[in-house]
Length: 291
Image (cartoon, rainbow, N blue to C red; front, side, top):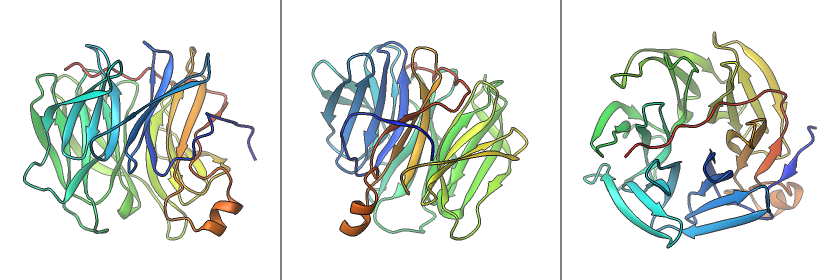
């Protein structure tokens, strides 16, 4: 098993969307179901937490200050000083059964986020959206079941995106200037009973790191889709990963304790933990939301 350190003593229900904030020198993430935004300061060990008004699927650092959070029904600003949120861009207001899930910013400062049916598994009613700096929302793909794994190659020519339910990570051609996607193809597929693809990040070498939910491991993929490395983890339900620290050399991994029985939780003390590991490579800075 790898050497790791736990971030705080919080046992998350469904921790997701880790993002390193260079401005705060801190790691931010959401606990979707509770719902809460957390911010960990490695220098002091302090964790700040803010309760959200609805399910919080993902977040990003905002260029204008504070954070933006993909709440159940749209992208909202979060002022850490007051804990107050304000809706910036409603998403799917005509579909109250859906909620926002995984999201991340591209290097032009647009926020990309997918939606998911909140109660019924296996429904292809979600979509992928792009939210511009002007808060305008545009649908980019549809018929999605569980959206995850948003990440971009270092040259901004490839967007990675997973439909977790379908056990597939896709790659799209990406046009950074126009914010357009095209030429979807299968990047990686998962066998039955081998876990499913959840959240991802890309390292400085252009390799994709993916948290294998239900699989107790991370995968590192080469740009051509070849499985380059497998890293075992001390939890069965890792949800996502992000590079952080002053030199972006620490890989933070979020996880979930949801749906585990009392016996399973006793056997798995790190279920729902956030851990920090050294995987020998560095990451790339995550862009701020420009709106």
